[in-house]
Image 1 (cartoon, helix red, strand yellow):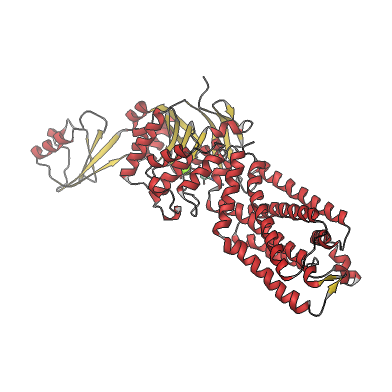
Image 2 (image 1 turned 180 degrees about the vertical axis):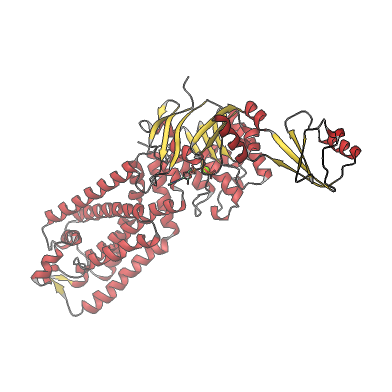
Length: 308
Length: 253
Ligand SMILES: Nc1ncnc2c1ncn2[C@@H]1O[C@H](COP(=O)(O)OP(=O)(O)OP(=O)(O)O)[C@@H](O)[C@H]1O
Ligand SMILES: [Mg+2]
């Protein structure tokens, strides 16, 4: 069986001479949710742009369900729905007109019942005849999704679907993506949030400076990435870690003014409660505490090093 | 052939006209009326006929051409410039539609609008002057060919323009002067020989002359030459549009 998407030896050099993608090879399986992670400027949008026909590849090839995106662009593109990163909608039309437009553009005969279903699922039905300019940012983003779904695509690209979207809505989108997957749609999403990839994806690809540095099953990757740090700001600096606390993975920082505890968020127990109890018993008092996750940036640096 | 895509783009563009009907229909009709008042009444009172045609009637084909050319260019230019500018073009580029289908949608809509407008102006003119059209079918053929080729030109400008100022420059600084200098309101045969030769380098002279011929059988240049010039112009525009889509010029990076 062919892959949903197969990218082989893909390179992209922009007219400015900037090399945005370097020898990308990637297979997306049918029906999976694939998350593409990477810092700003990594090349995520460029890769999606090429697959969808918006950006010209410099060399290499891409097939969608076995159809070459250039030689057989009609077959390839009619399978794809794209929700771009930028919110760009025609401010003067309405959700109803613009989704009907999208459906027609992708060569599908009108189907009001289907469009009603899509708009309702995205809670836009009661706004269907409003001017798009009067919708909120979150509604516009949902409208972009509705447009992408209007022609019943088998593959859906979501380029940072949850950027600037509140928590409630974000959860709703995740729900929707899962439902789509259940109906057999293959989904490729990009994100900066590890949490998002973790919630959603079956597999994760990490792209950095135009190179795809890793493609892995989510479970495997999360094991590698799921470290968090708890920093305790002490009332009185201490010279050494008291022996009572030796069983915890602690390090001293800031000349003894801070204690740093590293733990695994995915472990059964984080050990924080017992740490705090032990601190109390040892008479170490703290005035403030904060937690940090290693940033995606740090993780990439780690990953790149690991690769070399 | 993705007929639904052509239809979607066409309807979208026509809906835009409905939103902006003041500027796309009312204002051209208003300026035509003004031309009639100023040129027809004021000048026509002194200059009664040109080559046996009443001056008021003589300027009708020229006026129609003036509107047809400027409106075709600006309609089509805005039609494609706006989605480029707002970013909504991504959807058209990612659609399973060929360059031909996309152009047919945009240019077809722009051309239909200006043909409609030309006919409205013709009807408005009939209120002011008695009109007789010697070759109605030729008249329509010229109308359609001109609308289509100048809508193509507008489409090219809309792709080339990287700012709203450039979008207005071509219609304003090129099309309007060339139309005025192309015999809209006079016969080029009234010019001194030197200037008459100069006007032969103005492509619009051929259009206006041919169009006027279809009304009054009066022409500054041979009708066959007029037809040849417009077909040549159409071919050049089509070649440029073909190249734009082949290379993705200003559409794809
Ligand atoms: N048209 C262009 N011309 C030149 N360089 C470009 C162009 N478009 C993008 N780039 C560059 O290519 C690189 C990759 O951009 P891209 O938009 O693919 O990144 P991204 O991974 O989507 O980033 P983000 O997370 O910020 O959306 C960036 O360095 C960007 O500046
Ligand atoms: Mg991006």
